[in-house]
Image (cartoon, rainbow, N blue to C red; front, side, top):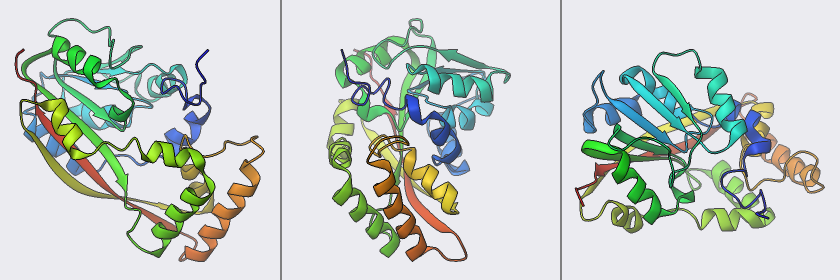
Length: 259
């Protein structure tokens, strides 16, 4: 039996509420960049693969005719359906990057936000080629926390490294640029960076920390000792009862050439 904590299709199941409320969305500039560089029109069909609670789906839905939100995790997919279920063009799909269940040549663009590092890349590339049509464009997006931005971010990074063994493993899943380039090969890939940030009071900051899969969840015996350190971190760095988490939103996009 697969351990739910190590299975990317189930590891966020107990964190859906915190994820939906406190994970960073994507700045409006991100939508405009994807719309222009991927040549979206009002008739475009997009597959958001690993769509989670629908943060990227929600951003791009107004810019296309149909948006397939492909997500294997039932609670995450249900959260997106609750938010977007009544929106024209929104289609919720139970599927994975390796088996989307979508038809051949059925989409103009595949996007994947904050999910590509969980994919079996060879199988995902084959699947994306199968479902894409036209210019066969793919966009990969990450909100990368700026862990050296200032003392607050450096202290937060040290806390994670010192106290969270799972953080080391997750951090090692960060995909370096050469591996992203290899995914698009032999075509080229371009990268754009857009600044992003979130401001939190103490409750929101705790929720944001708890949305991460490497943090002990409520009810875990490690939770109380760790959350005390999180609160101490907040108290040291808050200004006017708030802290600001800073990110660089990275957008990679390119075409998949014909076989």
